[in-house]
Image 1 (cartoon, rainbow, N blue to C red):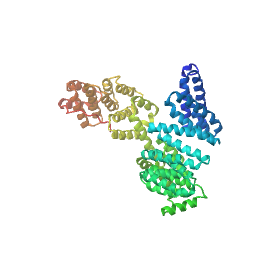
Image 2 (image 1 turned 90 degrees about the vertical axis):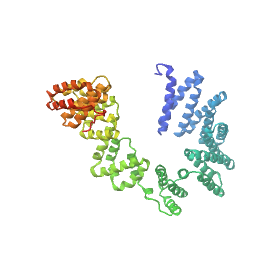
Image 3 (image 1 turned 90 degrees about the horizontal axis):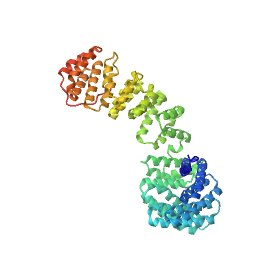
Image 4 (image 1 turned 45 degrees about the vertical axis):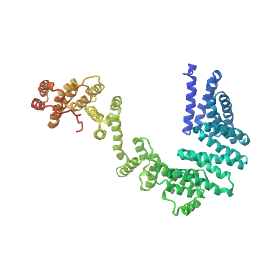
Length: 563
C-alpha cells in the first residue's frame, strides 16, 4: 500500500516499529533489528516533511539503540541513543509532556556510554535523568518507579567512577523508594532486591551488618509470599553456588509453602545454585546448617526430564498434548513421577488432577487410547458451543469423527452438562448427519435454525416416507427453531409421531398433550394427518384415539434428544 500511496507510510512505520517490539519480546532480538531500522528510516523521511513525526522518530531511535545494545553492538547503539536524547530535548523544550520521554532517553544514554567504557561521560545524563524524574514524581506518584530505577543507575555510575561514598545516598534512596512501591505492589520486589544488592556492593565489608539490617527491615514489612519472592530475587542477584543463598532460599520455600507458583520459581533457583559441581557441596552444607535438613529430592531432579515434563503439561491442546506424550514415553515411567509432580506446580489444581489421571490411564492402555476420550470431549465441546456456520463447516471437515458413535455419546454428556438448548440441537444435527448428510435434510435443518425456511412441511414429508429415522432429530430442530406457538405445536406433533415409531408411547402421549396446549384448534387437522401418515406407517394410527381424548398439558417443555 505504501509503495503505491505515500499516505500509508505512517501506518507502515508504526507496523514496523511494533513488529520490532514484538520480536524483541519473543527473544528474537536479532530478527527485531531490520524492521526497527526500517521504522527509523521511514519516520526520518516523514519527520523531514512534517515535524509532527519527530516524537515517533525519537521513540524508534530509542528502540534501535536498546536493540543494538542487546545484540552486543554497543558502539553502534550509541549514535541512535544520543539522537533520541537530542530530539526529545527539543520536544520537551516546546512541550513539558515530553519530559518523561527525555528522562528515559537520558537514562538509556547513561547506560550506553557506560557499556562502551565512557563512564565519566555516562554520569551527567544519568544525573539529569534523576533530576527530571524527581520533579515528575513530586507531581505524580506514577513516576516513582522511574525515579527508583534512575536512582539505582546513578549509584552504579558513581560506583564505576570509584566514588563509593557518593554512590551510597542515591542507592539508599532507591531502596527506600522501592520499599514503598513493593509494599503496594509485589511487581516491584525485583527492583527492591536489585537496589538492596547494590547497597551491599556500595558498603565496605565492615558495614555488611548494615546490609543485613536493610534486608531485614525490608522483609519485615512484607506478607509471607512477598518475603519469599524478595528472598528469591536476592538469591538471583548473586553468583551460582553462593552458599549464603542456601539460607535465603530455605526460608523462602517455607514462607511460600502454600503458593505453588512461587514454589516452582524458588525450586528452580535452588537447582541453579546446585548446577556447578565445584560449589555444590558448600551449598548443600549451608542448606543443612541453616534448615537442619538435607536438600529435598526435588533439588536433584534430572533437568532434561523436568524440561520434558513441563513442555507436556503446558501444551496448548489435547491433540498436541497426546502427540508429545506419545513421542516421550519416558514420561510414563515411575522414575518420572517426581519430575511430573514438579512440572505440575505451574498448572491449576483441577488441571493437575486431569493430567495425573490421564497419565495413569496411558500407562495402562497406551497414550492414544487414553487420549481418545479426551480428544472426543474436546471435539464435542467445540461442536456444541459453535455457531451455526461453524457447525456446518465442522460437519464437512470432520464429519466422520463427529458421527462416530463414541463422539455422539460424548456430545450427549456435554449436552447434559451444559443443560442448554444448544446441546439438544447439536445432538439432533449429528443424528441427521449420520444418516442423511447428503439428502438435503441436514441443509434444511440449518436453514430452519437460521429462520430461512419453516420446517413443518419438511417434517410432513419425512413422516410420509418409508424411512422416517430423521423425523425425531428434525422435530427437535424444528421445536428449537420455532418462532410462533403454531410452529412449536407442529414440532411437538411430529415428535409424538417419532415417539410412536420408536416405540415410546408414554413420550408420544406427553408430546401430543404439549402440542395441544399450544394449538388446541389443530386437533382435527392432526387427526387427518395421522390417517394419511398411517397409510405409510401403520403404528401411527394408534395416535388417533390419543388425539381424540387427550387434554392439553399445563405447559410445554423442550423435547429430550437423548436416547
